[in-house]
Image 1 (tube, rainbow, N blue to C red):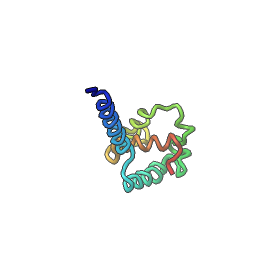
Image 2 (image 1 turned 120 degrees about the horizontal axis):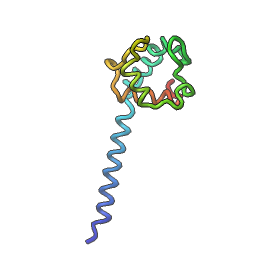
Image 3 (image 1 turned 90 degrees about the vertical axis):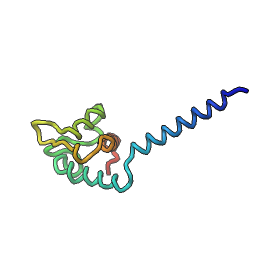
Image 4 (image 1 turned 135 degrees about the horizontal axis):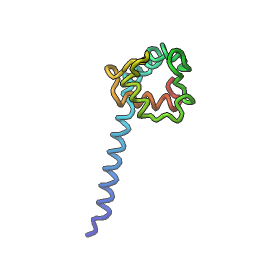
Length: 111
């Protein structure tokens, strides 16, 4: 008996399950997402401008973030920037949440 089709189906199921788990981890639950957006616009907006176009802090527009590595932006959010007004947000955000916010900001969909 040829077990190739069975193996392919099992591999496909495993791949789909992993993909769904990754997508679920990438986006926070609806209530948390709303809280994160509020934090972004009120707390981050206090320095980066209420429209995120800059202020005391640099702009957080897709144009301003273009070419900046997402992992570097996540590290800045989580660890802050010593010697500047940028505080660490690690006590309030998980790494996954910071990644989600960076993705929204880079795509221009943080509304």
